[in-house]
Image 1: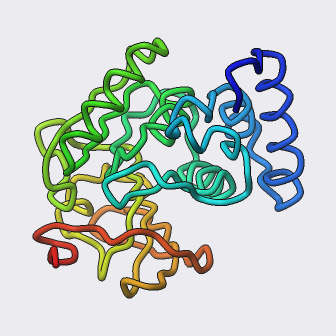
Image 2: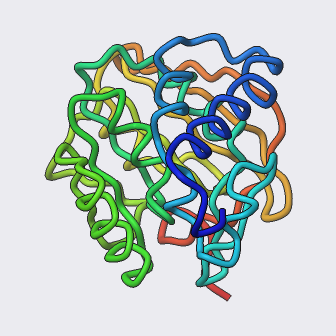
Length: 221
C-alpha cells in the first residue's frame, strides 16, 4: 500500500478481496463479510508489506509470526457463528487484525498474546482504530483467561498438538471453540461445540499455522 493510496483505494481493494477470495470460496455469513470489508488490513502489516496487504496469503509481522491469509480469517470467524452479543476469547493476538474483525462482530473481545511486543503493538493500534470493546492480555494462551470466563466463543490462531483442557473448561455451554490441531507442520481446523459436559468436534479442513506455544501446547525450542 503506497503512501499516496487513499481511503477509496483501500475500500476498493477490500471489496475485491471479499468478492474474489471469500465469496468465491463460499464464505456466506453476511456479518463476517461486512467485517472483512470494514477492517483496514493494511494497517496491521509492516510498512514494507503493505503493497501486499490484500494478497491471498499470510504475511510476516515480525517475531517469527504472521498475519493469516484473509480467507482463513474469514473461515474461522464464520465458524464462530457470532450474532453480536457474545464475549469472545482470542488466543494469539499477533498483528491484531483477527482481533479487529472479531471486535466488529462481538460485544466483547479478550485477546491473549504470549509475545509482549506484539501484544503492545496490537493494543495501541486497536485503540487508535477505535475498538473500545477489546482487551489485550499478555501470557500463555493455552491456559486461557479464566478470570474473564465463560466465553461464548474461543478462537485459537496457532496450531496446537491437542485441544487445551483450559479452553474447553472456559467455554460456555453452547459455545464454539475453533482451533487448528495437528503437527507443527500441518493441522486440521476443528470447530468444537460444548453441550453440557460433552464436546462435539467438526473438521473444517486442513490448514497450516505457526505453533501454539505453552504448557498445554508445544514446547518452545
